[in-house]
Image (cartoon, rainbow, N blue to C red; front, side):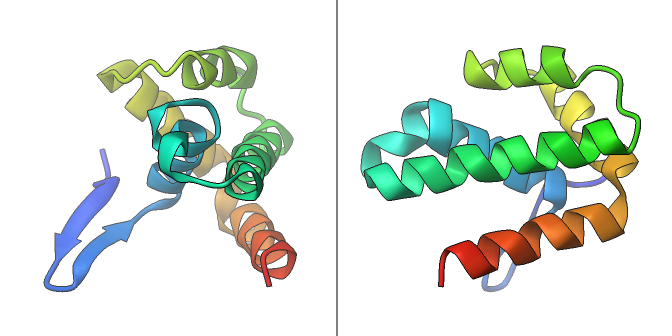
Length: 106
């Protein structure tokens, strides 16, 4: 499995599955306690858009993954599912998702 959060000298490199997990935690979980309403809404939209990209790429378990993310489940299963979802979304779809988020948050 690829590293989702890879330590660097400046902090962390975060892979797309890591972005999905962080967005879900901010949008639905404890990570949102330090965020604004707009930040929570943006995080929810980002998680939704990543899952939509995975659906478009043929990932068959998006509904299950979404349910687990909304419930705040943290497990190896969720990490593996997030990795597979992002792999199936593909780099082009994910790049488009991240670009839309950048545009929304300017």
